[in-house]
Length: 265
Image 1 (cartoon, one colour):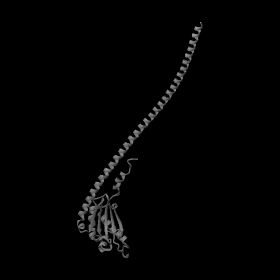
Image 2 (cartoon, one colour; image 1 turned 90 degrees about the horizontal axis):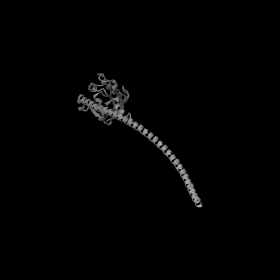
Image 3 (spheres, rainbow, N blue to C red; image 1 turned 180 degrees about the horizontal axis):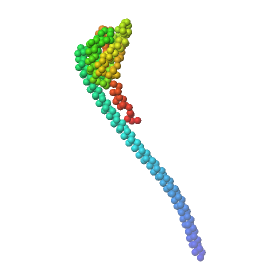
Image 4 (cartoon, rainbow, N blue to C red; image 1 turned 180 degrees about the vertical axis):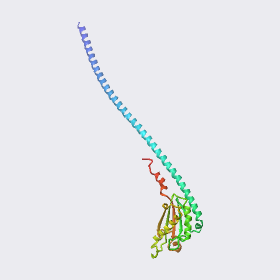
């Protein structure tokens, strides 16, 4: 009997120990489950945050790509517009060169005798044509009244210049440095050079082949010599009329428009 009780006691104690251990193990499992569920919830929240961040970045990338495409199209349009302007400018330059070459040839033809005798110097440089004439073929000494020879020469020049309408004609009057007496019609070389330039302009306009808006008379006085004023020959060269033919300002618009809009803002 005692042995039976002892065995039952041992079994009871064992069962109680096992039950206690099972209860502890169950509690540990519950704690582990709760921790795992907490970690799972945290991971799901992180996943959701990452997905939202990724979605935002993808949206930003799409918007950036669209903006970049628009900018590329804008720059391509600007490049095309600038290229068209450049092509137009090149055509204009070529036409200008051709017109100036034609005009130069026309002047050479009209003034062949005067050029050969070196009474007139004709040059073409950088899109401009210049004519330099010593006063001896235009004016009697000390006056601003054209002589017959001067009228004849200017009529030839007028005929040649009448073929162009896109240029400004600048007439400059120059003198030597010998002072005037001040007793005559002109008090100084400024007045004499102005009067001679104006006489040339008036003669060029007589035939009504040229537009008065395209011609300007400029007094240069004695201050732009081309030769030595201490010699007789030098002073004769300095007493001159110079005519310059240059493109009108509006023909330079193409040049300005090329730099009007930056290709990259």
